[in-house]
Amino acid sequence: MATTKSVLKKILGILLIVVGLLALVTPLTPGSWLAIIGLELLGLRELFDEHLQKRFPRLYAKIPARMRKR
Image (tube, one colour):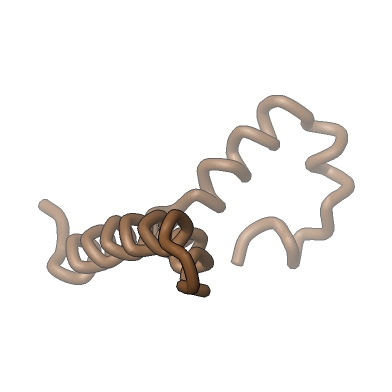
């Protein structure tokens, strides 16, 4: 069962993506960066990291360990 913290994190991530996309299409609103923060909250970095490791193992090995997972 999901914890309350993880559910709230997912809701906040989705909300930030929606607000960021709306800010992207509306004029005079510098808030489209919120979509990137929302994607980070939903775990896009981990998904990309796993894909990179499977697809390009030699390139992934060259990335310093401190930069791989935060």
